[in-house]
Image (tube, rainbow over all chains, first blue to last red; front, side, top):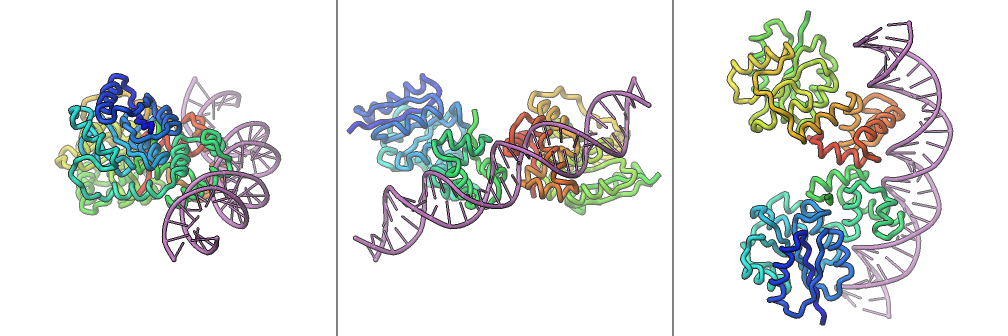
Length: 210
Length: 210
DNA sequence: GCACGTCTACGACCATGGTCTAATGTCGCG
DNA sequence: CGCGACATTAGACCATGGTCGTAGACGTGC
């Protein structure tokens, strides 16, 4: 059983620190590293026996919560622990709305990190008070969660201003398929063209940019 | 010489208060009122001898600074005094970036309001420390100011998700003209399609919505 | 095993978007 | 007056976007 843990953070030193924590919980796990969101996405596709993803909120290639949504869409079964510098407490809930299992402050001590990792690989949310959804978060969760993984990837590409043809190429599908996904996305977002879809998506907090 | 002053605010009581202030500075001026941005736009088009616009930042039909840009585009020669509830001091500069001549807090006393009005109709900025542009504001000013009035109106319609055909109808021009404007807009914004244009425009703070 | 729904995928078909060329009229400016 | 910037429109032409019908793969429940 080759277990793999992906550590996605653009700061090499911090990757080292996270690696230490992971190794104390899962001594035999293989560890994959990624410094950009694109690299993380590739690693997630390639990894065998992926058990956990540690993801920095501020990564080159991602702003906001889209990175979480993207990786979660790719592998809905793998728990994602979001690691971030400060961000206050509100972020913890928002992060969960996009599919992460938990939120970890970068200034947490090693014990807390190990604890969170241990809980995450058992698919248990880390210790934290259960907070009832407030309205905007619930709306995000429902809308974003209502999209299939492929649809989400297409939508993120649209948010990048890409043409259907470019999206088809970068996602390895035909243009006809992209169009079909667009139709489904627009139906779910209750809009009539891609410009409105992009605007709505961005207003929901979705956005992949450097 | 029938001078007209437009008061655009969704709060009738506040319109009354502004009206008093205006009448003390310009006793003979005709006063037009508007409770929505659409009404304001219509009034601006119809008004004769329009000398001044008092505009609330938070109006039905407008979020952010688009309303200023729209009215300013319609009548670049008429000074606009923006009136807002609180908003801190940063707004004063941003408001100017979109074409307003000055910024007035709603909790200002009557004397300050009258003073600002008197200065505005002489096309003098109201008393305030001249603040050097910081980078984002300068970028907004250059980009938005670089658009012609009609182009701005078309862009705002695109931000509403409208099709060329719909834009043509609502602005009273042919679809060919809309396309011509779109081409010019995209060239100025340095993008290749309307979705990117909408995204850029919104990131610049432009947005008309209820 | 089979029906059912979901996701993914594709091609045909028509609507919309965008470029280019060209022409007309207005306005302010030197 | 000529010049340039802006606004407007048309027509041709091609690219792109979006809908519809269809089909296979997969999982769930009966």
